Image 1: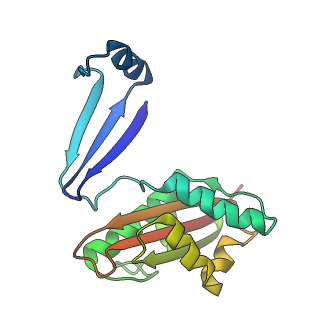
Image 2: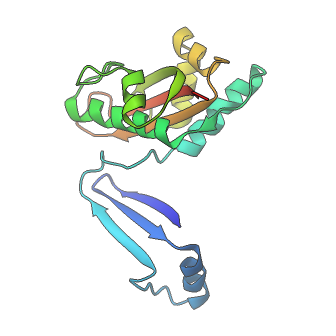
Length: 183
């Protein structure tokens, strides 16, 4: 299955789940028709309730490019760390705050545990106000503490959270969650 996320002017989010075989059949069709049994469409009325960051691959590539410049190995993407980051991004926007401490008092390690991530090390970067992953990575690399997380050799995995809202103080909020799983 292939998941495609589209955001339409911040008004709604449409999630499409497409079976690769069905996608090929539609392409061969050539008439732009879509069968209901080939695509499932669900509408999410609140754009800040995205299931996962739409920028995961770009953030991963940019983070790993910085690590490569420093002679460090690339981080692997972790869906669990991504879920922890996404949950925190949504919490900050919905509750209108900006902190490593969640609205329920949780810390990054608590949020990692809550999604089932068993770790030996956890770290987190947050940023607000940037429109793109490149701007966000640049901001983090200019900050000694954030840079230290990105370039730490103790982490082997990473996940990301992103959401935005016109009513949120920074409009856009970004989260990186770093981890090293327990063996």
